[in-house]
Length: 164
Image 1 (tube, rainbow, N blue to C red):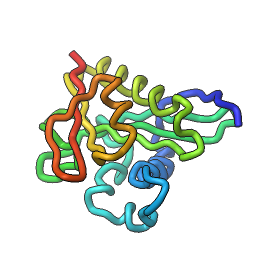
Image 2: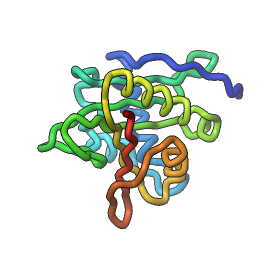
Image 3: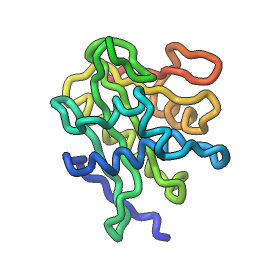
Image 4: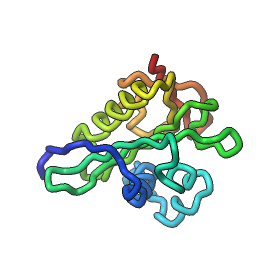
């Protein structure tokens, strides 16, 4: 496998792939995978992909050198009455990121995160939020990219990055 990949903006037809990456994000552990149908029928999880490319939705797709989609990061601003796991406030987009397991630890996640963060900053957002399970190794990535824990419970934390 080549470690070469490219990033491109997500488009409306990428909605199905974002669903795939939502499943990957939920299944960050090697063991105990959550069935696809369970993730994609969860009311809160569906908020991240239903009706993809609403106004304000923005994303980036990573593709291998052969053109295979291997990861995605996207954000959307959810309303207060239908928050996501990492909701912090009105007007703060919530970031979701998923990478195919074989491509993890190859810099794909970091590249996606940096690209989407730059896009959010250019769009004028002051903050980005995300939610991650406490034991997920991606927490280290998020911290190294400037995200800080703002709240949490026994299993999950909300992290926020200030953009300006």
